Length: 221
Image (cartoon, rainbow, N blue to C red; front, side, top):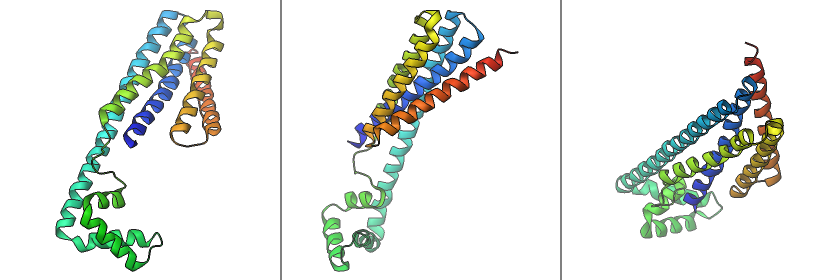
């Protein structure tokens, strides 16, 4: 479940980044030039750069997490062999902090460490599920695909809609897709959907205003 949620998380974040990154470039370039081909090429180049950047970033991040998990397991194996009493006290104190009596906590600790010691220790000390490491390839592919899909919508809206309505169409598409990613991220994280949707809409509007203003400023030179 953790691995699936991590993959979905990478996908949602990648989609949101794809939307905002691409629309930022589109707005900046569109202010500077009315040439639709130039706008399209700029947006497409940014979409590809964003997708591969997000993908490589997720791969590196999850790989580091996987390495850290593996190192924690190796450390606990060594401690079990050299300082078992301290490990026993660690598990005992874990349950005592949760209101279990000292005698019962000790009994629980002894029982757990006699049956599944390594699983118990990495769970209690690091919150890890032994043997279930995050897969960096899943996260990388999810991020690559979702960033491409996210950036696709503003790119199509800006470059394929009629020139006289391309701005309102693009703004509408960005707001709707940003709202959708906010809703999905809240659902996956058991958060407040309304708050996440409003937050994403506000961020998308601010992003568009900033890049529109930047394009206007650069067009002065």
